[in-house]
Length: 102
Length: 514
Image (tube, rainbow over all chains, first blue to last red):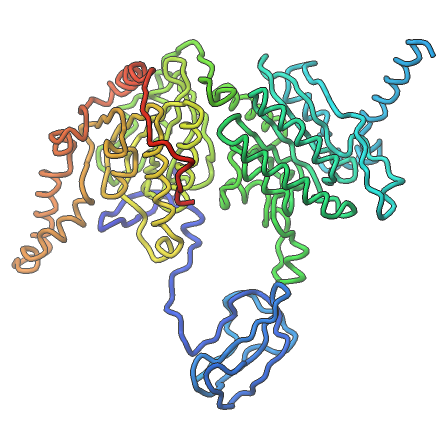
């Protein structure tokens, strides 16, 4: 037994080893609706909006191509584009911040 | 032509096939630190027991210049032989022949030996070392994989199926091992993935090495795809042979019995387990203290280490052990450990192996991460597997048995045949701290010194409920035993369960929470 740590289950503290998988787990964060994240790894093929532009809910912001499918990224509500973090032609990993809106 | 000339001609033809992909390809295989397919087969089987079939099979591909290529045995060796004198069927992909790629005839050879294994009710050992589908054969190679997967599924639960990954096993090919009972991997040699590093890099921009993506360690520690991890091919072969000593040849048989042996005296059961339920110990030492010759053959040693599974013997007969491991994550149940245990329980049930459950766990692992990963659905697998199992099922509660975990770990309510508890057992709806906080919330809140009151109430709850006697009073526990009595109680209960008959409603099959 090595690397014993304290580990709380329902209020009781146990002395135990942890698994790598447990140590590597990510803490949950509340999703921010003002941040548009990639939902699949892929390539940005076209961006239709500019920073500062007013956009209506449902309008397309960009196309994220992944697994041979061209996915439209839609505006979730009426608002303004605050910042665009991606460019046409770049590859994006999953869960990456692409656009901030207000 | 004289008979002699015929025989000489046959020998010449065989010799050609035995060269596989030729000297150069064999040198390449050796340079990669790998044995050849034939060396592997003969190393696993009893000496001189291997008999090969379909040596002269040739592919029928006529596109992309394939008509000019002769591929010896079409890149796979099939045959029968014995291990410790008992018959087995075996196939081994030969990487030296067209990279072990799978074409139609290659697949037909494999399905032929699979059909034979199922009909003859003998174990099937498959050695995988292949670049994947033979692209030149197009949809025919996909058809080949499909026929193999279908047979894997038919044979599942009827004969043991062992997959040995001794090279690349990529794309669709990975699904045959995934459908079999036990997967063996070897450090630096085994590589399994659906999509290789190249594609991942070009499509997704993620850079990762083959080893990091799907090497032996990854599959034995993180994904849970592999059951046995070895440093060398020879160590792997020893694992295969040892596993076969514990399991029956088919589902209508019992595993072979060995002469009974007492546990080794250095495993003193009372000294292994600390009385304080928050202190860790290695549950495998308890298993060693109660099994014949202290020989415990662990399965999935490095995956979801918070639960321990594996085979041992009691009075010479194979038993399957399922045990919480307090040394890792306090022995909690979570998605991975439930999945690991459930599959093993179903294996034991399919192959007539009694299950001994050793329980010491504080419940299911709390956290958003677990809840969102589906701990409800995965945790349900263990309930399903225990409830469904009709082999003899015996539980020993060593210390903690709290909440949902108490129910799940082969409780009386899952129809355990025998329930034993040590006097240190704490069987309760939850741990004393949590329970006292809820039950005595008002008293604690209103006390002058809430912290002192909380401690008092926790102690009160511990005294009254954290023991085996409340459950024993209801008959949920059959008897409270001294730790030293554990082995003799288990031996006796297995013996009297020998003719157990327990029938379940007739159905096509259940719908387990896969």
